[in-house]
Amino acid sequence: MRKPLNVIANFHWIVPGEAARSAQPLAVTWRRLLTTNGIRAIVNLRGPNPRYSWWRNEREVCAALGIQHLDVTLDSRKLPTRAMLAGLFDAFDRAPRPLLIKCSGGQDRSSLAAALYLIQRDGWPAYDHAMAQFARWPYLHFPKAQQRWLRPFLQFAKAEAGARPVAAWARESYSPESLAAWLDGQGQRHFYREIFTKAEASRWQW
Image (cartoon, rainbow, N blue to C red; front, side, top):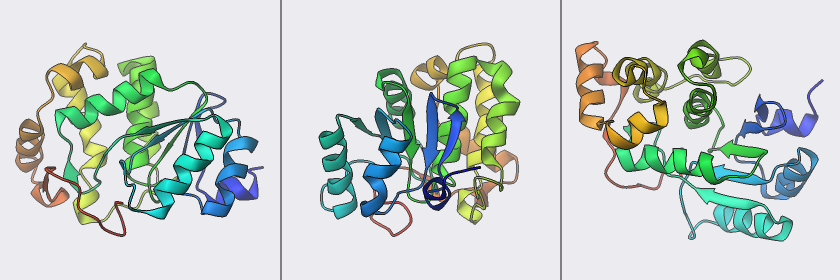
């Protein structure tokens, strides 16, 4: 049975004892969530946000507990640049285990990052397992119209990468323009807003 705190935080193990995913916990529950699950690193998909109290508290808790904190910027409505994906895979490479991947709700960006973690870890044979990270239950992935590119991204990546490891493809060959053209060709132009240029504060993203 899942711990009540894990349920509240939408916390789930991607690989038990190695990598997990969650929403942004309440400030008062951060320390307990991390310690009870033995987390040693956080991959924060909301990016560096020193002007917001949630980010400052997160950093303070990590510093107090000796947990590595890694900021990665992803936007659930805007297609990622190559540098953004490279930053995600760099964080996976650097983070001690067990690591926690988290965004605001733990539903959309965390689903994509968790899926990419599995493919980086186990290669393209893990594709079906990775796609399961987008399940409505238990992960609550109910994307809004312009967040619906997240799941098809894996199909695009698999077709474009071929036999290449996903991280090498993302760092060396991925193009957001090619992703946009592919989505448009699938009749999915309404699945995303635009290609990412800069972070814009919003209650959903940051």
